[in-house]
Amino acid sequence: MTAVDRNRTVAVVGAGTMGQGIAQVALLAGHPVLLYDAAPGQAAAAVDAVTGRLDRLVAKGRLGASEHREAVARLRAAEGLAELSGAGLAVEAVVEDLDVKRRLFAALEEVVGEDCPLATNTSSLPVTAVAAGLHRPGRLVGMHFFNPAPLLPLVEVVSGAEGEPAAAQTVHDTAAAWGKTPVLCTDTPGFLVNRLARPFYAEALRVYEERAADPATLDAVLRECGGFAMGPFELTDLIGQDVNEAVTRSVWEAFGRDPKFGPSLAQRRLVEAGRLGRKSGRGWFPYGGAEGRDGSAVPQTAELVLAPPHVTVVGPLGPAAALPGLIERAGVEVRRAEGPDVVDGQDGQELPDVPDGRRGPLGPDAAASGAIVLPGGTCLHLADGRLPGTPAVQFDLALDYAKASRIAIAPSAGVHAEAVAQATGLFQALGMAVSVVRDVPGLVVARTVAMLVDLALDAVAREVATAPDVDTAMRLGVNYPVGPLEWGERISAGYVCRLLDALHSWYPTGRYAPCPELRRRAAGADDVISS
Image (cartoon, rainbow, N blue to C red; front, side):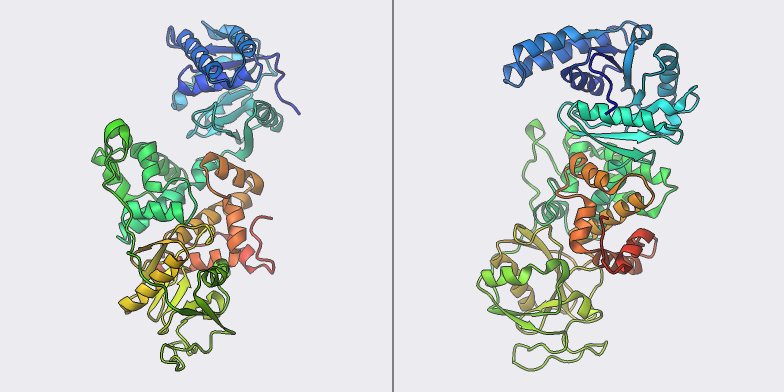
């Protein structure tokens, strides 16, 4: 353990919201803390603000009176950088301006001791660029807290191109000693969270741009079927459309306009219109008093209908393998066929051949995907990126079909209304609200999760971070229900790769081309994601 000793002073430069939060974290971990800000009086005001936060913790019973007194005694404002000379760690939280940060660290380097790591809380600037020009650039480390710093556990510890492993380890261990969960990563655009989270927003925006569903419905599907805490439209309204779009554009530019990170024209238009979200009173949704949703936007939900009396399961259902058992428990008879060759139609006759020569309604690659066949012969299949060659209904991927409270289904051209009603009633019998959306490749959750898995695997293959740190970062940094690599393991590399290959055939821009590491895992005998 190489954490900075609790008796050493932590210097926090920049006394705004993030600086105050970082100071509070270090203070409650037992360090003396010096707050400095170039703006006259700002550091003293920040000391008062932090003290006020500690007062409120005492009032709520979260901090004892003696701990409060000791913490307040360890906190003071510095009037000049020279007062930081004895610091054991210096953390910068000033404006996101490269020149400003470079000048600050050049000055700090002349003040603090050789054993003092320098840490930048930047969320968007390359750590390598911030460190450029220092006499010893290797001791500058990214220490990216998430806002609010006292509450959110994740800290990204970022090593620049010339980073010294010992400096990164000290910052990592110090964050852990402060009660945070640090993850190590290399200096990559967006670091871990902002790099890997782009598909969560981007895929929903793409589906919206294709007019498959409205924002409220897409949010509901990702929440209630995908298990995400918030939908991307409501979340970007909370973040600020301008802020979220700027991060997306920054990552896209930093990756040389790689199509995997391409921004959304629909979101750009929203920003241009001044519809920035809650802070402007309107974004994707309108907001009323106290920035609350006015309730006018509700998800599209099908009316209740009867479930079919029976269904037939043909072939393996892959990630949807739990459905037959759930259907049986809901009181619907489940008949099983051994393969995709023969399925009984509504009249008890063998179903006709499909264009690829297979018997039954399953279409290309049926043996790999399987299907649930409704009375009358219409096939229900898990979204895998392909639009069926014969009339069928696809349903979305769920985090857990037993717990999902909503699902998206999409009938292809030629599907009769009766079959849509049967599919709707089947999922309603499982306790799910049903949103009928336009038939787009990969639907909503499936394509989003596939892209998250692909980017996560690519990051691990490029040694941006370890697999455990990737999953930890996404669970704690953006509150995903599971990490993308764990999710990929659950649904298999083969399924993810087939889905992205199919999407790539529909959108041949390179955006959906599976990364080499995903192809390697999919081709492997064990089909493992997270090892």
